[in-house]
Image (cartoon, rainbow, N blue to C red):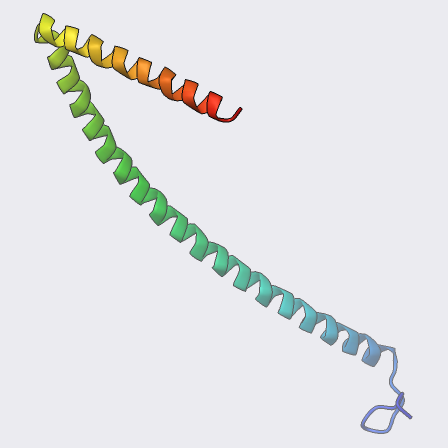
Length: 111
């Protein structure tokens, strides 16, 4: 009795195909809705990433200005005279020696 339509007649091939088409159309509609939600979520993520990258770009620009000023001051100091060059050599030698001392301490403390 379940094979009969609401109007009391037996379903024909066209009715069965129409019901199948309606079911497939509903499935397609739900998949399209899910894809739309995914694309909107991706759009929001991309916009967040773009704003983050824009902020990083401005940070890098300010860092570039800071480093440019530091290089300029370092160049002026190196050009200013022999006393500053000697001081710079002492500072570099001290830093290299400090690096080797720390390296020696760390390697021997593990054994």
